[in-house]
Image 1 (cartoon, rainbow, N blue to C red):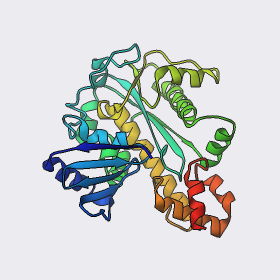
Image 2: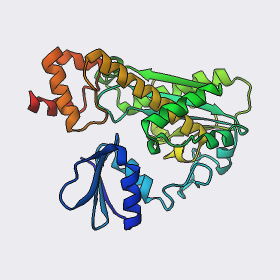
Image 3: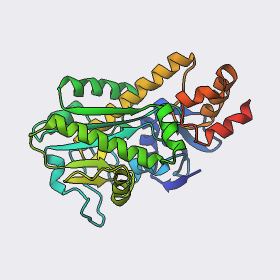
Image 4: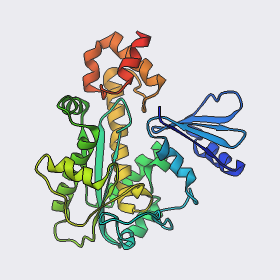
Length: 311
């Protein structure tokens, strides 16, 4: 299982404890706290060492290893790294642009959702004042509230859902999750461009989940080409209001889909890919048979095999 370890001052550890207070679990001996998110299990020790362990530990650790982990979209600066033709210009974050992001990729249960939002430069400050920022730094209640506010503003957006049954069919055909995400982002962008039509557009920013060359190869294999002025950036939702808004809409739809699955199956469906997920899988198999997983889960995840220990 991927993991990373970092050492923080006590003040930061206390901030982390407060930040994760709604997703705490029983800590092991010697630990200050343990919390579980969709990306990782975070265990903080009295020594200041913090262990991030799970499907995407670097995403969770990245919230705290930056020099200013609580910096808002307004004041954040893009990370310094080697520039490429696909790196967004620093001016893009204050201009009219499209941003896309996804949710549900690391969760065993539930679909992948991708959302794209078009934000004009005049709307940026208003969205910022509403509290729009990276959904990973927001609790689900606030995410849903902000989603309603974004939609209420009638800002152009497109949201697409890849149901589990279709996900599993693509996976069986040899598609990687990366290719599925690339095609979803590409389709969202194409749809949103039609809605934006002739409005000012200074660029398109994708929250980077693979190298641009790989993204181009994925969509190229299905006969598509990269749209002009498309940029890629890791942690883009921390710098772009459009990507942050996209992350909120995508996350909200994912949460709605998880609620729907819970109602249909008559059991609370957990997020992530934890031991609790394994136990839930086993319970579903006992009650409905293994075929039920095809319509509610990403069956190629290791959880499918691990769950058999509980049967």
